[in-house]
Length: 468
Ligand SMILES: *Cc1c(COP(=O)(O)O)cnc(C)c1O
Image 1 (cartoon, rainbow, N blue to C red):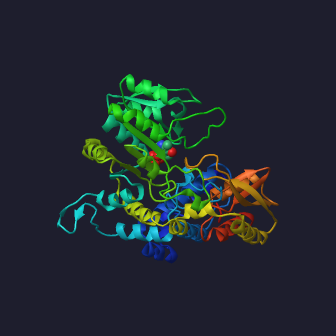
Image 2 (spheres, helix red, strand yellow):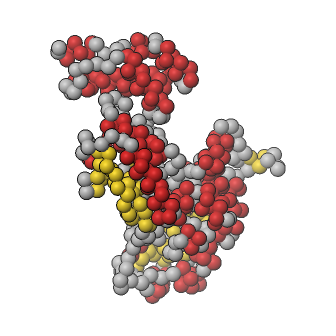
Image 3 (cartoon, rainbow, N blue to C red):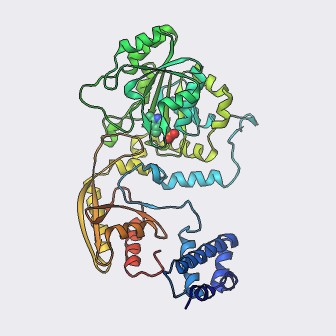
């Protein structure tokens, strides 16, 4: 049979839409979603036929079954949930911090109606969107004032543009960093209008380097946390207290981009080296910025805390209007900040913090559970093994989390094929390949993921159609 003949046998859109199960699905969800999925499915079949991979065309009932399964897995959307089996908690490519149930519920509530985003209910007139989090941020950090923007890159940009446009800003050569997603300190500075003065060397920067910069007219000293690498050996950096001692008598600002922050001592999570915003403020930082969706565990946002004078100037900057935070992110951030008041509560409610704190005592039984679920898949061979997980997301470089993974091999599928099929499944599963096996780190699994992984592996083995 030639290709043209096969193509003509592919069921038509109208025939599919006429099936009772499809019209029911349209009522349950929406007509455009279902139609969009059918079109995608037919297109896929057409491509398979043209590529010579398919000579048998599926029946319209089989296509309908596939469409309904995809509908249940949010498959009609390009942006959709995935299983993170990488063991990287704040995975930059997988949406960084996942919401817990309570946060998701609060955000959904704010999203599904009107809100007092910029309305002062007590006074019955226009209010400020910052009002919802400013008092909390001041309480948690000891700062005089606070505001939030779209993300931390925007926060750094706004800080420099407001306080140091057309001025010199000194940065240590050891802190001219690049963070994922092409955030590069020299380029952000150039875009903001600040003039970068590099001080010190890659490994060592001394107080006198900053002193000379201030003498040469620097109006601000910027410290940037090296969020995604560690320097060790013959190194030296200057702390905030020292920077304040150098900058303040000359009327210069001390600015600090910490990147990721917890607002309570990290020891609660077994972490020793977390930057402490409260301390930086107490030691004299005029402005400190950090992300909302790294260790805070809320939505993409850039938090800015600091002196009344600096924050007021930023609020008045016209650019702030272009960088403003959305109500959904703000709702998530307020919820996360409330939890920061009590470390034990934050650890329980914020999935990323819970994952970071989990040790082998919790991970080993979870790995055993996944292994036994996978052992039921025909031809599967599993092994539980120790792995090193990461916090990720430009937070806590060098911190190694002792984790557990399940290594899987399937008789009929190579590791590379299995990894690809898992990734392309209806509910995609992102895992990694190591030494010819697929590894599932269990630290980053959410509720229901063990079942999902087992079901998908079974579908891949028993394949044709379902697990495409
Ligand atoms: C992550 C990070 C940024 C960028 O923050 P986003 O929220 O991704 O915009 C900037 N600076 C540092 C030091 C960071 O760690």
